Length: 224
Image 1 (cartoon, rainbow, N blue to C red):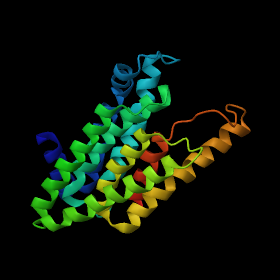
Image 2: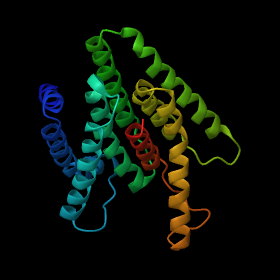
Image 3: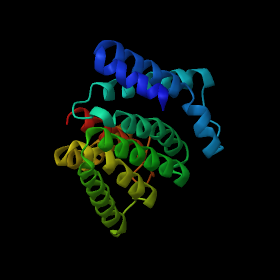
Image 4: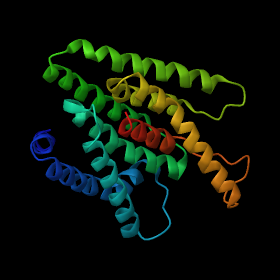
């Protein structure tokens, strides 16, 4: 997108300005997350709509700003931002109704693929696309095996999202990919323990994994 291209140029020429610009872009994007998520859930959310918009705007500003300073992203930054933007909506939908709609997962995949193809062309190394493809395949295989285990609560929406996240993480390298595969389970486990301790959930309560997948991938990218 032209706007993203301008922001990437600003980031490379004036890092502080670029980070602030992307954080502001994230805030604007995040403000629309509750409305966009509502198109897929149809479930009314508690609390004032303005408060939810402000909360998601603040979260999106942090997510976009963090990606702006992520090492190793380079020309693939638009791909990471596209996945992040759709990922915020996916997280909101999953939190509301335990679903990861295929159209949104597909949109994230399209944004990641298009952005990485463009980045490889800019980088002059089309062979670099092999790592993201391998990352997506490994993520899909690993999570599919987990989903098929007896008693597993992992849904195939989670499997498909993990495969999509394997694309940008594969671009960053194998350490980032492996961290992105393991960290979500740590985050999810901590969240479950916290909810159990606060008596906000029971052992048989179904909890969404999508937000943990997305948060784990973001943290893996930041620490790559």
